[in-house]
Length: 91
Image (cartoon, rainbow, N blue to C red; front, side, top):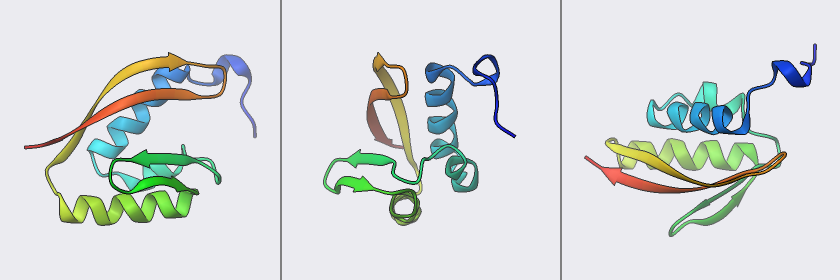
């Protein structure tokens, strides 16, 4: 069942949900919010295209860097796109 526009989260809420899922390592939750053709740009890895590639990359990244965390700095909130810069932190 699809949601009405009033039931959908705002882009800001969606970005917060996505980064919360990433920081909690909840890839199952994150998968719910990634389009099949999602793009993810990460320093050193470049641009990754596709939900499966992104989730696999994050799984490997989190295994290699278990204390990695992200903070965000919003740049733009567009109709269907959230553009944000993210700073990875290693605690």
